[in-house]
Image 1 (tube, helix red, strand yellow):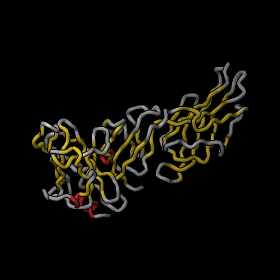
Image 2 (cartoon, helix red, strand yellow; image 1 turned 30 degrees about the horizontal axis):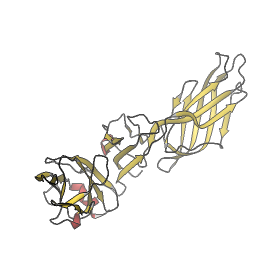
Image 3 (cartoon, helix red, strand yellow; image 1 turned 135 degrees about the horizontal axis):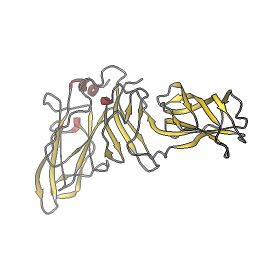
Image 4 (tube, helix red, strand yellow; image 1 turned 90 degrees about the vertical axis):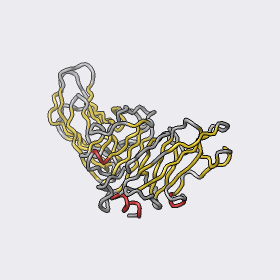
Length: 319
């Protein structure tokens, strides 16, 4: 555990942003903020701060009020700031900013929006965070995941649906592009409405945290969804517990696809351990609707359709 990690068990960070004089000719304004611990002393090591724009991109900062060609280093290590913990720069009036704080190991600890007033930002790792060797800060992102769909993982066709038994499938399985939960439904031939089924799909594979796992999903002709997010799948076992074929039906197709719960790469003890969710660069409220601490999954508020990006920051348990 590095120096900063030890520090934050009893530390909060304050960022004060103040506006100085505006220069009419260049339309530049002097901004500054300082990074403090909870005792009011500037943090002097173990942290890098980066000023970003509203799109999360690194912002060009100007070092003097008389030249837009003279730039400042961005991001900057707090150990390189003199006076300690103080970041001062010039920018165009009316620009909104963000501050991204990163530790020595490259973990993003905080991203927050700031404006042309004084702001007090509490460090995202509360007093009880980073306690224990397995606790760690996690920043996880999903880039444009596709919409959920049946048959994206596997279709299994059985031509003698009157037989009640088990079917094991260990080939032709498509691994989801990102770890996510599964959906399954039984599809019958056309022309008959009297066939009924109650079946179980047993999934075996590796979950989002790299651990071998299993899950059993009970389903029928209505789509059913699982709870666990799968990084890879080795086998499916389909067991029909109740199966009545009627009329001219000659086959049944089990259609297995993906749903909209994404797997977290580390366990989460409580919803409160998730301190930021961003969907398409817009903050989303953290709630139990979004985070499942039993199965360690995240459900986006904005439905995935292949064009939206998702990002969360949380304290992972390491499990």
